[in-house]
Amino acid sequence: MARTTPTVRWLFTCEHGGRGVPGEYAALFRGADATLASHRGWDAGALDVFNAIAPSLADAAVAATMTRLLIDLNRSLHHPRVFSEFTRPLPAAVRKDIAARWWRPWRDRVTGTIAAWREAGHEVQHISVHSFTPVLDGEIRNADIGLLYDPASARERTFCQRLQALLGERGWRVRRNYPYRGNDDGHTTALRRQFGAGYAGVELELNQALFPRLLEPLCADLGEALSELRG
Image (spheres, rainbow, N blue to C red):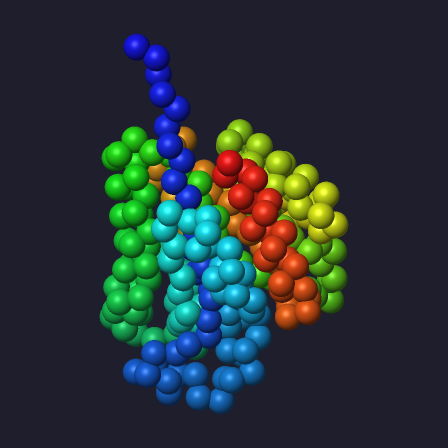
């Protein structure tokens, strides 16, 4: 009997889509409006791109609008920066409660979706949408789009090479594993460890200098390029 090619399910997430503060923690962030509005508080523009491209491409899409300064959904719980300077000084029991109420349900929702797809025999393509500040510590980031992946994964590497070429043809400056490394601690890294070869995860990093002026053409070109890869 001929073997069939597994169906690939596409998952989109946006871990840092907003800067909201749950009401019970508002006092922790009193006077911190500027920090919440900065790149430390959220990934400006990421949710706009997520909302523009995910509906036509995703089999499932999950976005978070809580500030990463409460707890960072893209960090492992053991990471020293999973809590910020606003929440790190809290008693351990309070931090554990925040993780149980905000970090764990997010992770469980995503892993539950992937687990169900894998159980059904599907492979998974995950696009995690982020953005980055155009200047950090005096360094100008010289890319419009970064594609973060694990270099040890041939599937992720090939996907990013093809996406880089498609976006480059459309005039965007695209770099791979920039401005961060794709195998650092993060949501996709944790999912690779959990699900192995049936899972491929890519962090899409977008330069915040593109927003809002180039949001519309960026979304159009990303949508077209990803649609071509999806087939």
